[in-house]
Length: 236
Length: 291
Image 1 (cartoon, helix red, strand yellow):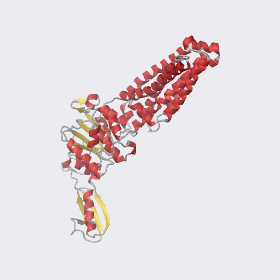
Image 2: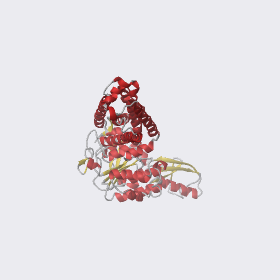
Image 3: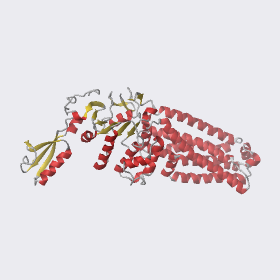
Image 4: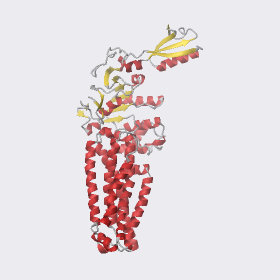
């Protein structure tokens, strides 16, 4: 939790943008209500079918998924900034001297990024449930924020590992390869913009599968990077 | 052991033992390999060959062994967005120890609620040193601990180290011979990544700091100076002593037109020209097992 707190105190613009993006995502997700797409009545599998029956506009609620995943990525980005900052001012070197391995250190920062991404994702789910109760529609499209949460955690996991690896390997003490990490993240969520419009049915499951693939790749990357990147790469 | 960065060897077959509780000063010019030596001992860098053993445990392999040592890098390694107290709490949570004790030891009471980023370099250094004393360790590695500190605080730190060294092993790096002589009992001289000398500091014949004064009058009646090549030449134990003599001359109304350093033992030591009373160090490179 300390790393997550420190990250947020270090960079406040990213969380603000992330919250705005989340609100836009929530708005898009809620727009499904106006098209009569209610999980309570048609079930998750039929959201994709609703795209066929209701036209392209019924796929719009699904756009909340990549938007909210991007919001999670932005919300967790300060963790990587902190990683680079700690590397440059010798904090990581000190942690190594205390007996931590490079894997321990990567894990700590990854955990912090997932905590932040999870926090904003859970907030999405809660807001959706509360707004559903208030509007009397029940848990309308509850699975969209849930899917966004899963995709967000997967993307954040991979992007954080990628950015920490690149930042460890770079020789010049500049930046954090942050634009590169953002690009990777944006590329990873790109398919989820298209899935609801391209895949006429089971959009939910295809998105879920894509999130699973990203998560699996991130786990492989994490294991590989913490084994292959030597401790000296974490020195200032 | 030998070690370095990205395959480039910096340390060349260094071998030494530190058995007694004492301050071992690792002396050498900038770029000699002192920090690399400390990082390797601390288990941060993996040696290319050889091992670093502490109580029989390989520091590079054993996390438990590494927990018996503490390393002060010449980077402050402080979370700058935190207050001093929170920064020390941050490390206390990881390595144990009491923040208040460290604050008290280093006299940080007035600074404890200030943000680290608002502190001067010297104050940051004190906080950085405080984190090393959060928890008692068996071996301390202090890389240029008193750089950026004013003389008063430097002395306080040295006093703490002297007290500590009665029961602990302290490796203390410096590029200042005079500081080394004040602090330590044993000397490890590192030059070009190799150990050039390993022995007692008392063996150093450092009273060879020679200064020439060019004056309008004969000063040999005021101080113990001998005329030599147009200068009145004196030998001192340290530059500070030369300063005191300068003050004495000025107080006596002597007009000094030039003051020149003729021979600096620190420079000579680093360049390998200084002879030691033990007769170990001379123009030749010596191996790491000397002493």
